[in-house]
Length: 520
Image 1 (cartoon, rainbow, N blue to C red):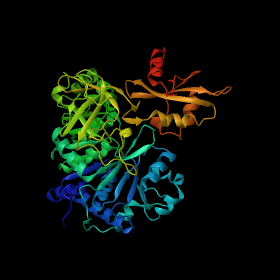
Image 2: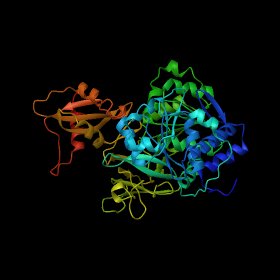
Image 3: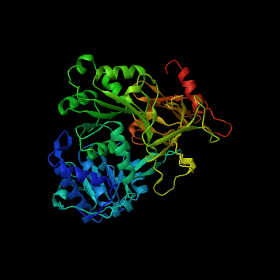
Image 4: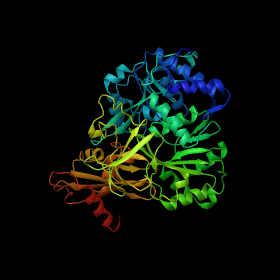
């Protein structure tokens, strides 16, 4: 192998594969691949991508649900310098089309479910991606070549692309204050360094078998698979989360670590006690939780269900990476807390005038360090409106307080972000779709608390004079126009929507009114 960047994601896989060729690397319900088998399939895919004209810096959209092939694609992109563009497999036609066209993707790999959205893509993409459309699975769809057939024709010789530490590995699409997705640039260097620091913080090593249940089109899923494989351990991928199946997988494959969100833990704990007792989960020693602080009762129940477990909570964002870490030793003494500064990270709670807040004073939580994506976004540099300050601090817009030990407690979401089941939902995006309905004059969307999902989407609408519409009708109308997790679960009809003198929706007032309703 010729000289290659020392901080390239793919180099880690090559090193591990050479040292442990027969060790199990990646598994799903169809079986396992060894590191040697994974490395050969990555070589075949890499050569196939090059043969169809994709080169260093080209963008390859990937739209599919969790399966082993995700790992091959991510590492083939790292090996060739092709930029991976993960697309949320839950998106509807227009959402998928926006990401693909915004990213300038010139190829796509999809599964049967997401390939059905292909008709909604622009003529320019259809033309540009000719010969670069692969279909994973056994189905046949016009315009797509079989992924396995293409791999079978690819050479398994190694690829030595001229890679740099600051080359882009993938785009992590996130939403901004306007609700339009933005492509956060994820470089090899930040990904590799992040994996080193995170594996040390979470005590993840070569003897671990990590469960990947978070979507692999999300930063969380991408990062944790790479962290575990780079450490020389194994990963097992679940296609989608199911609480009892998760326990079964832990038992069958002797899972030692997993990253879940509070909703998933709650669904496991909601299983009948006799169902939970059927499974031996004593191997699961590292339990990671993110997206929202765990309630004290939930923590107690988790530790009771998994007595050998070390519970870690962390807070972060697509652009900011890891920000805080609540370690196992602090779980029960720091309630409703997201932890102190993560390794290699500085944090500060700043007031609007830029000064550091006093202990217990509410301000905006900022971080800076190796995890922050200072590279900004594709097609646009980072700006103060995106949360980036000139002095290196970044904020995702969350309000928080610090205690006298430097631990962070989240207070509110400055940008009114709704998090439901671990998915980020921006009210303005949902409102824009709802107001396309001919009966609706205006709409406001807020998140209301839900014990299982964290938040659920609630829409408040004002109808046009003489219009008639029910909540069920509107929810059904939104099907196909919004991803399922973005659709309102509750609709309220009000004569007016609270706004301030400049016309800004008063979401806090709306939430307070909803909370006061008998059926809230």
